[in-house]
Image 1 (tube, helix red, strand yellow):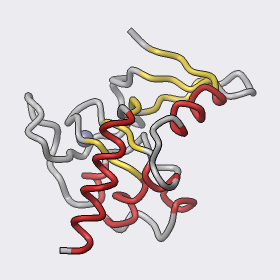
Image 2 (cartoon, rainbow, N blue to C red; image 1 turned 120 degrees about the vertical axis):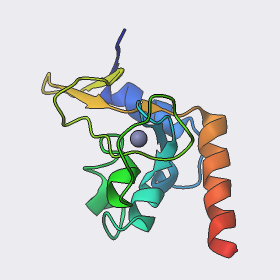
Image 3 (cartoon, rainbow, N blue to C red; image 1 turned 90 degrees about the vertical axis):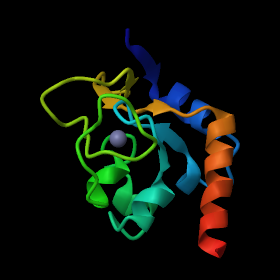
Image 4 (tube, rainbow, N blue to C red; image 1 turned 45 degrees about the vertical axis):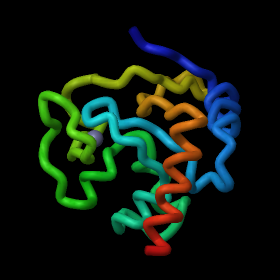
Length: 127
Ligand SMILES: [Zn+2]
């Protein structure tokens, strides 16, 4: 069962997560179920800032940039090397852009998950 959101609905849902910056908009990898954001991709070395990691965001698991292994049968809390660009369409969310194209994306984390994830990141940087 796939969910289709318009681009406006997608943006509104991200804003509703209530995080402090677009860097912390949070998604869940469909295979390993980890919550991840652009901040994670930057930290993993996928790019220098939001603009350079945006093409991976909600599309390639952050584990691809940290040398993570293939998805495990049961999620173990660690990232994996999944990308929606592969052969199998495992995504559950599609974003419909004004040009009529559908784009596969990771599902959005809930606001609670997104805010907790941002706080965890902040804690990790300080320690
Ligand atoms: Zn993953």
